[in-house]
Image 1 (cartoon, rainbow, N blue to C red):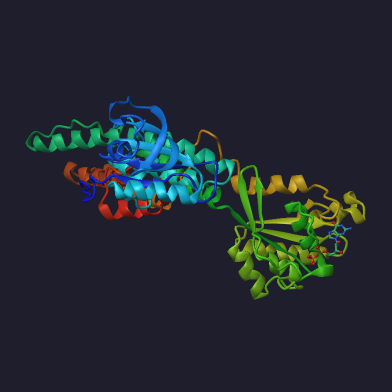
Image 2 (cartoon, rainbow, N blue to C red; image 1 turned 45 degrees about the vertical axis):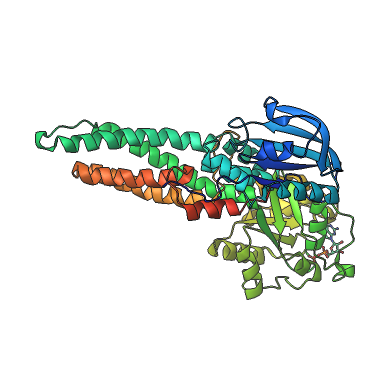
Length: 461
Ligand code: GDP
């Protein structure tokens, strides 16, 4: 569908640097009048005759009044981020000065950009496909090395390249089959069915892997929630402190004094672990007393991606630990059994004692013993050996849903081939798969979807 924007001819502007005081602040303009608008306020040089990708120092003046001395950088379309003429004006990073500059440009004919409008224009001008555009949003909001790496991979087109190759192959088959329909009287087969079968089978494997990576992608993007569960005095607060490596005293003696709003997040190898209900841990209100089945703790465990069950190896009865373990398994939790306070006794003897409940990780939260192993184990639980720097990981819910629908359609194609159904019906199934594929990269799109995607960007991107 052709995307028509009534305000397509506007020149848009936005602050490209974060609001607030900084050494410099950059205002970006994009659109047919970008150069003319800045030029009109920049007496020192005629910008309209300057080459693209050049920088110019001078004053921006509003009437006789100089607003700021700036550096103007020109990017003439189509060799710019948006594909249009883009001008970046770097001024001094004072919110007041930047506002004055923006007001002057607006007065001269630019308008404020909507969220994501720069990237939207880049997409519409064919500079990026939709997955790349969305990766820009992910990159801006990425806060760990893993999510950063993944967003960059997608901006470079990792994800789209894979889908494009598949799309081309499917289109070829679809065309061949449709060609057969023109010769329907003659009973010819241009499309080699067994080749198509192999292609579809390969595609099913690939697409399921991509769809499957979403779970991991989500983890990379949003982090993993961890519930630390255990009886009172198992050492939960102590462990939390040790993990977060903080010096704030928050062990039981002064429980309740630290109910604060600080988000407790641990970054291990680029994966964010979020500890839920930490106030509860600290106030001992979420302790699992004797019975793991207590609804409140179950609720907390259900909210978590990973349950870290902490127990005191000096007091925990083996039978009770086994019963808890069964309960976790029965509920389908991903859990880690962690025996704490090993510094109080003989570690080897403790391992023997709890042998029936292996695997258990033995630590001392207080002495910081085996804490690194615990962190590694948490990461292993999440990644399960699935991550690889070259892998494409789906982090976007929209892609995930389209991939699932595509998978269904591909399975239908395979079934159709098995059942040797007529070409016209087969062609329909292939078209459906192609449709969902196109939805991911933006070859099939509609205005609502585009508006939705780009509205989630920040202004200035
Ligand atoms: P919580 O009730 O599970 O949060 O337990 P706390 O973290 O408040 O710990 C209870 C008590 O056990 C405190 O006095 C801690 O100092 C102590 N404790 C916690 N972990 C260890 C450990 O690994 N070794 C030793 N010796 N004491 C610990």
